Length: 118
Image 1 (cartoon, rainbow, N blue to C red):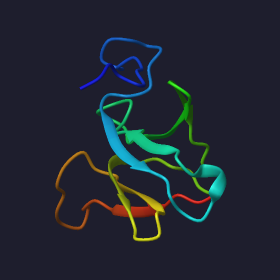
Image 2: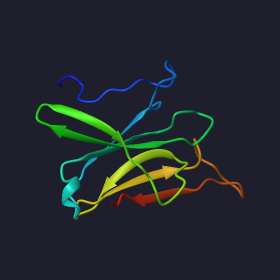
Image 3: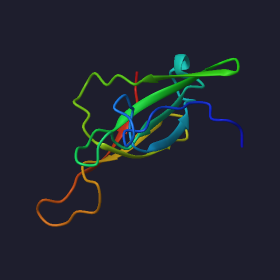
Image 4: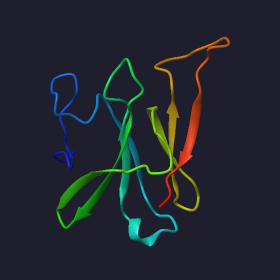
């Protein structure tokens, strides 16, 4: 292992934080060449009581990495970030839920898969 390439404060111990639990992602290798090599990842949520997951993009410049919030402009993204996936074309997807755990019955949860697009 090597030293961390990106770090941020955990919301359990800091008010100036990004989330509770990093959710690993994928290096983008899809059709948008401006994103080639960008590492898309996320955080499960900033809170246990509200679906407040976030998406991030990590980019490398030489030996240094930087992290930016991914701006979602076409929807109100209020989900827990569970995982990421990548298809054979190198496009990246985020797997989400609106529940903290399994739900059943008429008030059951909604799980979704979103494609990250420019």
